[in-house]
Length: 324
Image (cartoon, rainbow, N blue to C red; front, side):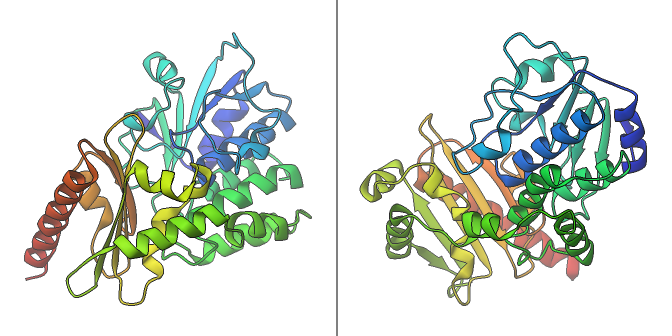
């Protein structure tokens, strides 16, 4: 296993062809945007590049994948993953390529497990899109059609540049993408300024059932499948729901626990008050960043809540002892 800089990764990509790009399961804007931007950048170089089918994206992200999905029977020479930190995050269709071996992983998570033969990782980046952007600049000019999904990658993973992972470098990358001539307004409206009626119903139900701990510093939302049914909501309506509780005054740690159709729960932890979200989720087999992390937990939403709160207390205890 070898770690690479962006310069080395760019040269490595230049020397290869027949690419298949993998995204993580339950994809967000960062992994989809990175895959689409990288795919278009490699094609501009005359390479054959496709994105692995079966991404499981919602219709919110479908437009960025148009024309990029691999045809049936495509056999790649080079497999690249984007925004995937660990083997457990691969899609069902991506797992076959994990077994074959991933040639290069591009990622920004501190919980990266170095599963690939080569890894380009920088936890200091606000989004994996920043890394892919830098790699592509070393392969030639970034065009507007590449800039659109990369901007989505960066903007969505930084909460429209409002989360604590946003840096000066994040803004510089976004500015450079805007200078390609792309139009950011429809993207911002689509991803940050539009809420369906069902989404508003979900938010209302979450507030009514929200549980608060530590005098309101910790807020927990339990989201069973029945809540989605009551609100008439779909998976698209639930996009980035984990950010919702953090908007409430006085909340330093927000935890959303969603019951999955296939069983178990998806847990998202967001923090702003010093608790290490990645350390919390790592105790439950997940990972992410210090301010935003996730994991999957078996059992009901109530059982998952107890497991997550126990992990929170363990991490808090460890952080206090470390500081004493």
